[in-house]
Image (cartoon, rainbow over all chains, first blue to last red):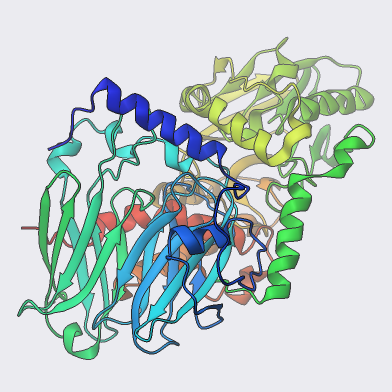
Length: 270
Length: 318
Protein backbone atom coordinates (compact mmCIF):
# COMPACT_ATOMS: atom_id res chain seq x y z
CA UNK A 1 0.00 0.00 0.00
CA UNK A 2 2.33 2.74 1.22
CA UNK A 3 6.12 2.46 1.01
CA UNK A 4 8.01 2.01 4.29
CA UNK A 5 10.50 4.71 3.32
CA UNK A 6 13.96 3.59 4.41
CA UNK A 7 16.41 5.93 6.11
CA UNK A 8 18.50 6.36 2.94
CA UNK A 9 15.51 7.42 0.90
CA UNK A 10 14.36 9.88 3.56
CA UNK A 11 17.71 11.65 3.76
CA UNK A 12 18.18 11.96 0.04
CA UNK A 13 14.67 13.34 -0.32
CA UNK A 14 15.20 15.86 2.45
CA UNK A 15 18.48 16.94 0.88
CA UNK A 16 16.88 17.32 -2.52
CA UNK A 17 14.00 19.29 -1.08
CA UNK A 18 16.46 21.54 0.74
CA UNK A 19 18.45 22.17 -2.42
CA UNK A 20 15.29 22.91 -4.37
CA UNK A 21 14.16 25.38 -1.71
CA UNK A 22 17.50 27.18 -1.73
CA UNK A 23 17.47 27.34 -5.50
CA UNK A 24 14.29 29.39 -5.54
CA UNK A 25 13.67 32.97 -6.48
CA UNK A 26 16.51 33.42 -8.93
CA UNK A 27 17.27 31.43 -12.05
CA UNK A 28 20.67 29.82 -11.68
CA UNK A 29 23.48 30.85 -14.00
CA UNK A 30 23.56 27.31 -15.38
CA UNK A 31 19.89 27.23 -16.46
CA UNK A 32 19.36 27.51 -20.22
CA UNK A 33 17.39 30.62 -21.26
CA UNK A 34 14.09 30.01 -23.01
CA UNK A 35 14.03 30.53 -26.78
CA UNK A 36 11.08 32.90 -26.47
CA UNK A 37 10.91 35.69 -23.88
CA UNK A 38 7.24 35.99 -22.87
CA UNK A 39 5.51 39.30 -22.23
CA UNK A 40 4.98 38.41 -18.57
CA UNK A 41 2.71 40.79 -16.60
CA UNK A 42 4.28 39.49 -13.37
CA UNK A 43 7.86 39.87 -14.63
CA UNK A 44 8.82 36.67 -12.88
CA UNK A 45 12.44 35.50 -12.95
CA UNK A 46 11.24 31.87 -12.97
CA UNK A 47 8.94 31.83 -16.00
CA UNK A 48 11.69 31.36 -18.58
CA UNK A 49 13.17 28.49 -16.59
CA UNK A 50 9.79 26.76 -16.39
CA UNK A 51 9.28 27.21 -20.13
CA UNK A 52 12.41 25.12 -20.58
CA UNK A 53 12.07 22.61 -17.73
CA UNK A 54 8.28 22.05 -17.68
CA UNK A 55 7.16 22.81 -21.24
CA UNK A 56 10.17 21.67 -23.28
CA UNK A 57 11.12 25.19 -24.43
CA UNK A 58 8.56 25.55 -27.24
CA UNK A 59 9.45 27.69 -30.26
CA UNK A 60 5.92 29.01 -30.70
CA UNK A 61 4.59 30.35 -27.40
CA UNK A 62 2.82 33.57 -26.44
CA UNK A 63 1.26 35.09 -23.35
CA UNK A 64 -2.45 35.19 -24.19
CA UNK A 65 -5.63 36.65 -22.68
CA UNK A 66 -7.44 33.58 -24.07
CA UNK A 67 -5.95 31.55 -21.24
CA UNK A 68 -7.81 32.71 -18.17
CA UNK A 69 -6.71 31.66 -14.72
CA UNK A 70 -8.99 32.45 -11.78
CA UNK A 71 -7.97 32.18 -8.13
CA UNK A 72 -8.47 34.15 -4.92
CA UNK A 73 -6.03 37.04 -4.51
CA UNK A 74 -4.83 35.51 -1.29
CA UNK A 75 -4.71 31.89 -0.16
CA UNK A 76 -6.85 31.53 2.95
CA UNK A 77 -6.01 27.84 3.33
CA UNK A 78 -2.58 27.22 1.84
CA UNK A 79 -3.32 23.50 1.57
CA UNK A 80 -6.48 23.93 -0.50
CA UNK A 81 -6.14 26.85 -2.90
CA UNK A 82 -8.88 26.81 -5.57
CA UNK A 83 -7.98 27.59 -9.18
CA UNK A 84 -10.03 27.56 -12.37
CA UNK A 85 -8.34 27.48 -15.78
CA UNK A 86 -10.51 28.42 -18.74
CA UNK A 87 -8.98 28.00 -22.19
CA UNK A 88 -12.30 27.55 -23.99
CA UNK A 89 -11.43 30.62 -26.06
CA UNK A 90 -8.89 28.48 -27.95
CA UNK A 91 -9.74 25.73 -30.45
CA UNK A 92 -8.32 22.20 -30.41
CA UNK A 93 -6.69 22.29 -27.00
CA UNK A 94 -4.56 19.18 -26.47
CA UNK A 95 -3.15 19.82 -23.06
CA UNK A 96 -3.12 22.32 -20.22
CA UNK A 97 -0.09 22.41 -17.93
CA UNK A 98 -0.71 24.15 -14.59
CA UNK A 99 2.26 25.31 -12.54
CA UNK A 100 3.36 27.76 -9.88
CA UNK A 101 6.42 29.95 -10.47
CA UNK A 102 7.76 29.65 -6.92
CA UNK A 103 7.85 26.55 -4.73
CA UNK A 104 9.87 23.37 -4.38
CA UNK A 105 7.70 21.50 -6.90
CA UNK A 106 6.38 23.92 -9.57
CA UNK A 107 4.34 21.54 -11.73
CA UNK A 108 0.83 20.97 -10.44
CA UNK A 109 -0.91 18.95 -13.14
CA UNK A 110 -1.41 18.35 -16.88
CA UNK A 111 -4.96 18.12 -18.20
CA UNK A 112 -5.78 16.49 -21.55
CA UNK A 113 -9.37 17.54 -22.30
CA UNK A 114 -9.97 15.11 -25.25
CA UNK A 115 -13.78 15.42 -25.64
CA UNK A 116 -14.31 17.53 -22.53
CA UNK A 117 -14.12 21.34 -22.63
CA UNK A 118 -10.78 23.08 -22.08
CA UNK A 119 -11.80 24.25 -18.64
CA UNK A 120 -10.82 22.73 -15.30
CA UNK A 121 -11.11 23.64 -11.63
CA UNK A 122 -8.72 22.12 -9.11
CA UNK A 123 -7.14 22.85 -5.72
CA UNK A 124 -3.46 22.87 -4.86
CA UNK A 125 -1.00 23.36 -2.01
CA UNK A 126 0.73 26.72 -2.27
CA UNK A 127 4.21 27.11 -0.86
CA UNK A 128 4.59 30.89 -0.96
CA UNK A 129 3.17 33.91 -2.75
CA UNK A 130 3.50 33.15 -6.45
CA UNK A 131 2.12 33.61 -9.93
CA UNK A 132 0.12 30.54 -10.94
CA UNK A 133 0.13 29.77 -14.66
CA UNK A 134 -1.65 27.66 -17.23
CA UNK A 135 0.28 26.81 -20.40
CA UNK A 136 -2.03 25.50 -23.11
CA UNK A 137 -0.90 23.58 -26.18
CA UNK A 138 -3.22 23.34 -29.19
CA UNK A 139 -3.10 20.56 -31.79
CA UNK A 140 -0.91 22.64 -34.13
CA UNK A 141 1.83 22.66 -31.49
CA UNK A 142 1.40 26.30 -30.52
CA UNK A 143 1.47 27.27 -26.83
CA UNK A 144 -0.50 29.98 -25.02
CA UNK A 145 0.16 31.05 -21.43
CA UNK A 146 -2.00 32.84 -18.87
CA UNK A 147 -1.86 33.31 -15.14
CA UNK A 148 -2.75 35.13 -11.97
CA UNK A 149 -0.98 35.97 -8.73
CA UNK A 150 -1.82 34.41 -5.37
CA UNK A 151 -0.53 35.79 -2.09
CA UNK A 152 0.19 33.24 0.66
CA UNK A 153 1.72 32.87 4.11
CA UNK A 154 3.82 29.93 3.10
CA UNK A 155 4.75 26.37 3.97
CA UNK A 156 1.94 24.51 2.22
CA UNK A 157 4.19 21.99 0.55
CA UNK A 158 6.09 20.87 3.66
CA UNK A 159 3.13 20.20 5.90
CA UNK A 160 2.06 16.59 6.23
CA UNK A 161 -1.37 15.64 4.94
CA UNK A 162 -4.25 16.61 7.25
CA UNK A 163 -5.44 13.06 6.88
CA UNK A 164 -2.95 11.84 9.44
CA UNK A 165 -4.85 13.65 12.12
CA UNK A 166 -7.29 10.79 11.58
CA UNK A 167 -5.42 7.56 12.25
CA UNK A 168 -7.66 5.59 9.90
CA UNK A 169 -6.70 7.27 6.60
CA UNK A 170 -6.19 3.80 5.14
CA UNK A 171 -9.89 3.09 5.57
CA UNK A 172 -10.92 6.09 3.49
CA UNK A 173 -8.18 5.86 0.83
CA UNK A 174 -9.74 6.09 -2.60
CA UNK A 175 -13.27 6.81 -1.39
CA UNK A 176 -14.75 8.94 -4.12
CA UNK A 177 -17.57 11.43 -4.18
CA UNK A 178 -19.03 12.93 -7.31
CA UNK A 179 -21.95 14.16 -9.28
CA UNK A 180 -22.94 15.10 -12.81
CA UNK A 181 -25.20 17.97 -13.88
CA UNK A 182 -26.63 17.16 -17.32
CA UNK A 183 -28.06 20.63 -17.91
CA UNK A 184 -24.72 22.40 -17.52
CA UNK A 185 -22.32 19.59 -18.34
CA UNK A 186 -20.53 20.04 -15.04
CA UNK A 187 -18.99 17.13 -13.24
CA UNK A 188 -17.46 17.22 -9.78
CA UNK A 189 -15.26 14.47 -8.38
CA UNK A 190 -13.31 14.24 -5.11
CA UNK A 191 -11.00 11.29 -4.36
CA UNK A 192 -9.79 10.61 -0.82
CA UNK A 193 -5.98 10.53 -0.89
CA UNK A 194 -3.24 12.07 1.30
CA UNK A 195 -1.25 13.41 -1.71
CA UNK A 196 1.98 13.45 0.33
CA UNK A 197 4.61 15.63 -1.34
CA UNK A 198 7.57 13.78 0.13
CA UNK A 199 8.88 17.06 1.54
CA UNK A 200 7.60 16.44 5.04
CA UNK A 201 10.16 14.70 7.23
CA UNK A 202 9.92 10.92 7.08
CA UNK A 203 6.85 10.78 4.86
CA UNK A 204 7.61 9.59 1.31
CA UNK A 205 5.83 10.75 -1.82
CA UNK A 206 2.42 9.17 -2.07
CA UNK A 207 0.19 10.67 -4.72
CA UNK A 208 -2.44 9.86 -7.31
CA UNK A 209 -0.49 10.19 -10.55
CA UNK A 210 -3.05 9.45 -13.23
CA UNK A 211 -6.75 10.03 -13.41
CA UNK A 212 -8.84 9.08 -16.44
CA UNK A 213 -12.47 9.94 -17.19
CA UNK A 214 -14.34 7.74 -19.66
CA UNK A 215 -17.82 7.40 -21.09
CA UNK A 216 -19.91 4.26 -20.47
CA UNK A 217 -18.50 2.61 -23.60
CA UNK A 218 -14.90 3.23 -22.51
CA UNK A 219 -14.40 6.26 -24.75
CA UNK A 220 -11.91 8.78 -23.33
CA UNK A 221 -13.42 12.00 -22.03
CA UNK A 222 -10.32 13.47 -20.37
CA UNK A 223 -7.03 12.45 -18.74
CA UNK A 224 -4.98 14.03 -15.99
CA UNK A 225 -1.43 13.67 -14.78
CA UNK A 226 -1.24 14.88 -11.20
CA UNK A 227 1.84 15.99 -9.25
CA UNK A 228 2.65 16.57 -5.59
CA UNK A 229 1.15 20.07 -5.22
CA UNK A 230 -2.38 18.86 -6.02
CA UNK A 231 -4.31 19.19 -2.77
CA UNK A 232 -5.01 16.35 -0.39
CA UNK A 233 -8.27 14.69 -1.49
CA UNK A 234 -8.02 16.00 -5.05
CA UNK A 235 -11.20 17.78 -6.10
CA UNK A 236 -11.99 18.67 -9.69
CA UNK A 237 -14.71 20.32 -11.77
CA UNK A 238 -14.69 19.11 -15.35
CA UNK A 239 -16.96 20.42 -18.12
CA UNK A 240 -18.38 17.70 -20.36
CA UNK A 241 -19.74 18.04 -23.86
CA UNK A 242 -23.53 17.69 -24.33
CA UNK A 243 -23.40 13.97 -25.18
CA UNK A 244 -21.19 12.93 -22.28
CA UNK A 245 -23.22 15.06 -19.88
CA UNK A 246 -26.26 12.87 -20.45
CA UNK A 247 -24.46 9.64 -19.67
CA UNK A 248 -22.51 8.34 -16.72
CA UNK A 249 -18.76 8.89 -16.34
CA UNK A 250 -16.24 6.27 -15.24
CA UNK A 251 -13.26 7.46 -13.26
CA UNK A 252 -10.11 5.34 -13.11
CA UNK A 253 -7.18 6.58 -11.04
CA UNK A 254 -3.84 5.14 -10.05
CA UNK A 255 -1.34 6.26 -7.38
CA UNK A 256 2.44 5.84 -7.32
CA UNK A 257 2.15 2.72 -5.18
CA UNK A 258 0.00 0.94 -7.71
CA UNK A 259 -3.31 1.42 -5.91
CA UNK A 260 -6.20 1.70 -8.34
CA UNK A 261 -9.42 3.59 -7.69
CA UNK A 262 -12.62 3.29 -9.71
CA UNK A 263 -15.90 5.13 -9.56
CA UNK A 264 -18.99 5.82 -11.65
CA UNK A 265 -20.28 9.36 -11.53
CA UNK A 266 -23.91 10.06 -12.33
CA UNK A 267 -26.55 12.74 -12.25
CA UNK A 268 -28.84 12.79 -9.23
CA UNK A 269 -32.24 11.28 -9.90
CA UNK A 270 -34.78 12.71 -7.49
CA UNK B 1 -12.01 35.65 -10.49
CA UNK B 2 -9.13 37.71 -11.68
CA UNK B 3 -7.44 37.46 -14.98
CA UNK B 4 -5.51 40.68 -14.93
CA UNK B 5 -4.52 42.92 -17.80
CA UNK B 6 -0.82 43.74 -17.66
CA UNK B 7 -1.01 47.17 -16.05
CA UNK B 8 -3.42 46.15 -13.30
CA UNK B 9 -1.25 43.15 -12.52
CA UNK B 10 1.89 45.25 -12.36
CA UNK B 11 0.12 47.68 -10.03
CA UNK B 12 -0.97 44.86 -7.76
CA UNK B 13 2.52 43.41 -7.75
CA UNK B 14 3.84 46.82 -6.70
CA UNK B 15 1.40 46.92 -3.79
CA UNK B 16 2.47 43.40 -2.85
CA UNK B 17 6.11 44.46 -2.78
CA UNK B 18 5.20 47.58 -0.75
CA UNK B 19 3.84 45.26 1.91
CA UNK B 20 6.95 43.12 1.75
CA UNK B 21 9.45 45.97 1.90
CA UNK B 22 7.71 48.63 3.97
CA UNK B 23 10.10 51.53 4.29
CA UNK B 24 8.07 53.02 7.15
CA UNK B 25 9.76 50.35 9.27
CA UNK B 26 12.77 52.65 9.18
CA UNK B 27 10.79 55.71 10.30
CA UNK B 28 9.43 56.78 13.72
CA UNK B 29 8.21 54.13 16.23
CA UNK B 30 4.76 52.86 15.50
CA UNK B 31 1.64 53.82 17.41
CA UNK B 32 -1.97 52.73 17.12
CA UNK B 33 -3.07 56.15 18.38
CA UNK B 34 -5.71 54.57 20.63
CA UNK B 35 -8.33 57.07 21.75
CA UNK B 36 -11.12 55.90 24.05
CA UNK B 37 -14.64 56.94 23.06
CA UNK B 38 -17.20 57.24 25.87
CA UNK B 39 -20.33 55.26 24.91
CA UNK B 40 -22.18 55.25 28.26
CA UNK B 41 -21.61 56.07 31.95
CA UNK B 42 -18.02 55.03 32.86
CA UNK B 43 -17.88 52.98 29.65
CA UNK B 44 -15.33 53.50 26.87
CA UNK B 45 -14.53 51.79 23.55
CA UNK B 46 -11.41 51.79 21.36
CA UNK B 47 -12.73 51.43 17.80
CA UNK B 48 -10.61 49.47 15.33
CA UNK B 49 -10.33 49.58 11.55
CA UNK B 50 -13.37 47.70 10.16
CA UNK B 51 -11.30 46.27 7.33
CA UNK B 52 -9.00 43.24 7.22
CA UNK B 53 -5.55 42.85 8.84
CA UNK B 54 -2.88 44.91 7.08
CA UNK B 55 0.50 46.36 7.70
CA UNK B 56 -1.16 49.78 7.69
CA UNK B 57 -3.48 49.05 10.60
CA UNK B 58 -1.00 46.83 12.43
CA UNK B 59 -3.78 44.35 13.16
CA UNK B 60 -5.92 46.94 14.96
CA UNK B 61 -9.16 45.81 13.40
CA UNK B 62 -10.95 45.13 16.68
CA UNK B 63 -13.21 47.00 19.13
CA UNK B 64 -12.02 46.70 22.71
CA UNK B 65 -13.27 48.57 25.75
CA UNK B 66 -13.25 49.21 29.46
CA UNK B 67 -15.65 50.06 32.28
CA UNK B 68 -14.57 52.13 35.28
CA UNK B 69 -16.24 50.54 38.31
CA UNK B 70 -15.85 51.48 41.96
CA UNK B 71 -13.72 48.34 42.39
CA UNK B 72 -11.41 49.13 39.50
CA UNK B 73 -11.34 48.97 35.71
CA UNK B 74 -12.88 46.02 33.89
CA UNK B 75 -11.23 45.50 30.48
CA UNK B 76 -12.95 43.77 27.55
CA UNK B 77 -10.51 42.22 25.02
CA UNK B 78 -6.89 43.32 24.68
CA UNK B 79 -6.14 43.75 20.97
CA UNK B 80 -3.66 42.19 18.52
CA UNK B 81 -0.25 42.87 20.10
CA UNK B 82 1.86 43.81 23.10
CA UNK B 83 2.07 47.36 21.78
CA UNK B 84 -1.73 47.56 21.65
CA UNK B 85 -2.03 46.28 25.22
CA UNK B 86 0.52 48.85 26.39
CA UNK B 87 -1.21 51.72 24.61
CA UNK B 88 -4.56 50.54 25.93
CA UNK B 89 -3.29 50.54 29.51
CA UNK B 90 -1.78 54.01 29.15
CA UNK B 91 -5.02 55.33 27.61
CA UNK B 92 -7.02 53.85 30.50
CA UNK B 93 -4.65 55.53 32.99
CA UNK B 94 -5.33 58.91 31.34
CA UNK B 95 -9.07 58.44 31.97
CA UNK B 96 -8.93 57.16 35.55
CA UNK B 97 -6.56 56.68 38.49
CA UNK B 98 -8.29 53.42 39.43
CA UNK B 99 -6.24 50.26 38.92
CA UNK B 100 -7.22 47.55 36.45
CA UNK B 101 -9.41 45.03 38.26
CA UNK B 102 -9.73 42.24 35.67
CA UNK B 103 -9.76 41.42 31.96
CA UNK B 104 -12.45 39.54 30.04
CA UNK B 105 -11.67 37.93 26.70
CA UNK B 106 -14.53 37.29 24.28
CA UNK B 107 -12.96 34.47 22.23
CA UNK B 108 -9.66 33.01 21.10
CA UNK B 109 -8.97 35.02 17.95
CA UNK B 110 -5.63 36.83 18.12
CA UNK B 111 -6.94 40.35 17.45
CA UNK B 112 -8.89 40.00 20.70
CA UNK B 113 -6.38 38.57 23.19
CA UNK B 114 -2.83 39.29 22.02
CA UNK B 115 -2.40 42.22 24.43
CA UNK B 116 -2.86 39.87 27.42
CA UNK B 117 0.82 39.80 28.45
CA UNK B 118 0.52 43.48 29.45
CA UNK B 119 -2.23 42.54 31.93
CA UNK B 120 -0.37 39.68 33.64
CA UNK B 121 -0.85 41.37 37.04
CA UNK B 122 -4.63 40.77 37.00
CA UNK B 123 -6.87 37.76 36.31
CA UNK B 124 -7.72 37.37 32.62
CA UNK B 125 -11.11 35.65 32.35
CA UNK B 126 -12.62 33.71 29.47
CA UNK B 127 -14.91 30.76 28.82
CA UNK B 128 -13.31 27.34 29.33
CA UNK B 129 -13.42 26.63 25.59
CA UNK B 130 -11.57 29.88 24.91
CA UNK B 131 -8.73 28.99 27.29
CA UNK B 132 -8.28 25.63 25.64
CA UNK B 133 -8.44 26.99 22.08
CA UNK B 134 -6.06 29.86 22.86
CA UNK B 135 -3.50 27.40 24.24
CA UNK B 136 -3.82 25.15 21.22
CA UNK B 137 -3.80 27.74 18.44
CA UNK B 138 -2.11 30.79 19.97
CA UNK B 139 1.40 30.10 18.66
CA UNK B 140 0.14 29.45 15.16
CA UNK B 141 -1.77 32.75 15.23
CA UNK B 142 1.41 34.44 16.39
CA UNK B 143 3.34 33.18 13.36
CA UNK B 144 0.57 34.38 11.07
CA UNK B 145 0.27 37.83 12.61
CA UNK B 146 4.02 38.35 12.59
CA UNK B 147 4.00 37.64 8.85
CA UNK B 148 1.08 40.01 8.25
CA UNK B 149 1.94 42.86 10.62
CA UNK B 150 5.69 42.50 11.12
CA UNK B 151 7.20 45.13 13.37
CA UNK B 152 3.89 45.99 15.03
CA UNK B 153 4.09 42.61 16.75
CA UNK B 154 7.54 43.05 18.27
CA UNK B 155 7.81 41.36 21.67
CA UNK B 156 4.28 39.91 21.43
CA UNK B 157 3.84 36.44 22.86
CA UNK B 158 0.59 34.53 22.76
CA UNK B 159 -0.62 34.68 26.38
CA UNK B 160 -3.82 32.72 26.86
CA UNK B 161 -6.43 33.80 29.41
CA UNK B 162 -5.69 32.60 32.95
CA UNK B 163 -9.08 32.06 34.64
CA UNK B 164 -12.31 30.37 33.60
CA UNK B 165 -15.46 32.46 33.98
CA UNK B 166 -18.81 30.75 34.25
CA UNK B 167 -21.91 32.22 32.61
CA UNK B 168 -24.34 34.09 34.84
CA UNK B 169 -24.49 37.23 36.99
CA UNK B 170 -21.25 38.87 38.14
CA UNK B 171 -20.94 41.93 40.39
CA UNK B 172 -17.84 44.07 40.15
CA UNK B 173 -17.95 47.21 42.29
CA UNK B 174 -21.04 49.24 41.40
CA UNK B 175 -21.70 47.37 38.13
CA UNK B 176 -23.87 44.29 37.67
CA UNK B 177 -22.70 42.24 34.73
CA UNK B 178 -24.10 39.18 33.04
CA UNK B 179 -21.62 36.80 31.46
CA UNK B 180 -23.31 35.18 28.46
CA UNK B 181 -21.81 31.95 27.08
CA UNK B 182 -22.68 31.33 23.45
CA UNK B 183 -21.01 29.93 20.32
CA UNK B 184 -21.13 30.04 16.56
CA UNK B 185 -18.39 32.47 15.61
CA UNK B 186 -16.13 30.03 17.41
CA UNK B 187 -16.92 27.08 19.69
CA UNK B 188 -16.82 29.42 22.73
CA UNK B 189 -18.04 33.02 22.40
CA UNK B 190 -18.53 35.19 25.47
CA UNK B 191 -20.66 38.31 25.49
CA UNK B 192 -20.75 40.61 28.51
CA UNK B 193 -23.86 42.62 29.31
CA UNK B 194 -23.48 45.47 31.79
CA UNK B 195 -26.99 45.60 33.27
CA UNK B 196 -26.12 48.80 35.13
CA UNK B 197 -25.65 50.75 31.87
CA UNK B 198 -27.38 48.49 29.34
CA UNK B 199 -24.17 48.16 27.28
CA UNK B 200 -23.54 44.80 25.58
CA UNK B 201 -19.96 43.94 24.66
CA UNK B 202 -20.77 41.26 22.09
CA UNK B 203 -17.33 40.26 20.90
CA UNK B 204 -17.48 38.67 17.46
CA UNK B 205 -20.99 37.30 17.89
CA UNK B 206 -21.93 40.56 16.22
CA UNK B 207 -20.45 42.49 13.33
CA UNK B 208 -21.87 45.88 12.41
CA UNK B 209 -21.55 46.93 8.75
CA UNK B 210 -18.53 44.67 8.52
CA UNK B 211 -18.49 41.19 7.00
CA UNK B 212 -18.60 38.48 9.71
CA UNK B 213 -15.51 36.29 9.87
CA UNK B 214 -16.02 32.53 9.74
CA UNK B 215 -12.65 30.78 10.28
CA UNK B 216 -13.99 28.74 13.20
CA UNK B 217 -17.69 29.26 12.62
CA UNK B 218 -20.63 26.91 12.87
CA UNK B 219 -23.45 28.77 11.18
CA UNK B 220 -26.33 26.90 12.83
CA UNK B 221 -24.95 27.62 16.32
CA UNK B 222 -24.33 31.23 15.38
CA UNK B 223 -27.97 31.63 14.31
CA UNK B 224 -29.15 30.32 17.68
CA UNK B 225 -26.81 32.70 19.50
CA UNK B 226 -28.16 35.68 17.58
CA UNK B 227 -31.67 34.74 18.66
CA UNK B 228 -30.47 34.47 22.27
CA UNK B 229 -28.97 37.97 22.16
CA UNK B 230 -32.16 39.37 20.64
CA UNK B 231 -34.03 38.41 23.82
CA UNK B 232 -31.97 40.62 26.13
CA UNK B 233 -32.68 44.13 27.35
CA UNK B 234 -29.86 46.11 25.72
CA UNK B 235 -29.35 49.88 25.31
CA UNK B 236 -26.05 50.02 23.41
CA UNK B 237 -24.44 47.25 21.37
CA UNK B 238 -20.63 47.16 20.98
CA UNK B 239 -19.87 44.67 18.22
CA UNK B 240 -16.43 43.12 17.81
CA UNK B 241 -16.02 45.07 14.57
CA UNK B 242 -17.85 48.15 13.33
CA UNK B 243 -19.61 51.11 14.97
CA UNK B 244 -21.82 50.96 18.08
CA UNK B 245 -25.56 50.98 17.61
CA UNK B 246 -28.72 51.21 19.68
CA UNK B 247 -31.43 49.60 17.53
CA UNK B 248 -30.37 45.97 17.26
CA UNK B 249 -29.34 46.37 13.63
CA UNK B 250 -26.06 44.57 14.24
CA UNK B 251 -28.05 41.47 15.24
CA UNK B 252 -30.35 41.58 12.23
CA UNK B 253 -27.44 42.52 9.96
CA UNK B 254 -25.26 39.64 11.10
CA UNK B 255 -28.22 37.29 10.76
CA UNK B 256 -29.03 38.58 7.27
CA UNK B 257 -25.45 38.20 6.06
CA UNK B 258 -25.00 34.69 7.44
CA UNK B 259 -28.29 33.67 5.82
CA UNK B 260 -27.11 34.99 2.45
CA UNK B 261 -23.71 33.34 2.88
CA UNK B 262 -25.20 29.95 3.61
CA UNK B 263 -27.71 30.24 0.76
CA UNK B 264 -24.91 31.11 -1.68
CA UNK B 265 -22.93 28.05 -0.62
CA UNK B 266 -25.99 25.75 -0.80
CA UNK B 267 -26.81 27.07 -4.25
CA UNK B 268 -23.26 26.31 -5.33
CA UNK B 269 -23.57 22.76 -4.00
CA UNK B 270 -26.80 22.27 -5.89
CA UNK B 271 -25.53 23.62 -9.20
CA UNK B 272 -21.95 22.31 -9.18
CA UNK B 273 -20.14 25.65 -8.91
CA UNK B 274 -16.48 25.54 -7.99
CA UNK B 275 -15.00 27.69 -5.22
CA UNK B 276 -13.54 30.32 -7.55
CA UNK B 277 -16.95 30.69 -9.19
CA UNK B 278 -18.67 31.11 -5.83
CA UNK B 279 -16.19 33.85 -5.01
CA UNK B 280 -17.40 35.62 -8.14
CA UNK B 281 -21.00 35.69 -6.85
CA UNK B 282 -22.42 39.17 -7.08
CA UNK B 283 -22.50 40.67 -3.61
CA UNK B 284 -25.97 42.10 -2.76
CA UNK B 285 -25.97 45.90 -2.63
CA UNK B 286 -26.75 46.01 1.10
CA UNK B 287 -23.46 44.20 1.94
CA UNK B 288 -21.25 45.58 -0.80
CA UNK B 289 -19.62 48.43 1.12
CA UNK B 290 -19.33 46.66 4.43
CA UNK B 291 -15.86 46.52 5.96
CA UNK B 292 -13.61 43.74 4.65
CA UNK B 293 -15.88 42.96 1.69
CA UNK B 294 -15.51 41.10 -0.64
CA UNK B 295 -12.37 39.55 0.85
CA UNK B 296 -14.11 38.23 3.95
CA UNK B 297 -16.72 36.51 1.77
CA UNK B 298 -13.96 34.89 -0.29
CA UNK B 299 -12.29 33.69 2.91
CA UNK B 300 -15.62 32.25 4.06
CA UNK B 301 -15.88 30.20 0.89
CA UNK B 302 -12.57 28.55 1.79
CA UNK B 303 -13.64 28.04 5.41
CA UNK B 304 -17.07 26.57 4.80
CA UNK B 305 -17.52 25.15 1.30
CA UNK B 306 -15.16 22.12 1.30
CA UNK B 307 -16.73 20.65 4.45
CA UNK B 308 -20.27 21.28 3.20
CA UNK B 309 -19.41 19.61 -0.07
CA UNK B 310 -17.94 16.50 1.56
CA UNK B 311 -21.16 16.14 3.59
CA UNK B 312 -23.45 16.37 0.56
CA UNK B 313 -21.78 14.95 -2.55
CA UNK B 314 -22.78 11.32 -3.27
CA UNK B 315 -20.34 8.42 -2.75
CA UNK B 316 -19.48 6.90 -6.12
CA UNK B 317 -16.53 4.56 -5.65
CA UNK B 318 -16.67 0.83 -6.30
